[in-house]
Image (cartoon, rainbow, N blue to C red; front, side, top):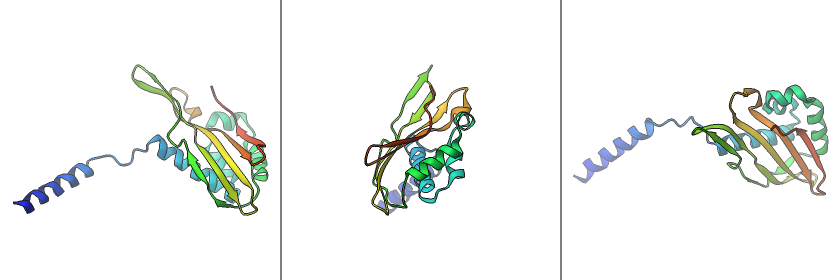
Length: 159
């Protein structure tokens, strides 16, 4: 009897798990992917990949090639420690009539250390939802601070 119950429980579990949609990403998963992509781009000086992460409205209103190149020059060295990441699921959510009309994430990547001993923190904002304004979906800005609290920015905030 115990074996039958276990087999039925296992079959039920497989069916239930198989019927869920595991492809839906949470805001924290999306934020983590953005963070990983940003760190990859800074570590490899990949202007085109970083530029592609920005929303269309920022790409059309900023000289992202220049801003990104200046940020890469400010960020000195190859990453040896990614430090810690906080706020991966935090951000703003605006609901209208029970439906999300705006949603952002604002992750903080702290204590990033490069091979020459420099330390940085990276803060960014990305819109995940911006109803009727698809051109605003993506990263709007990235702020990079060094250990002397000097700052360089790519993009800008969108209101």
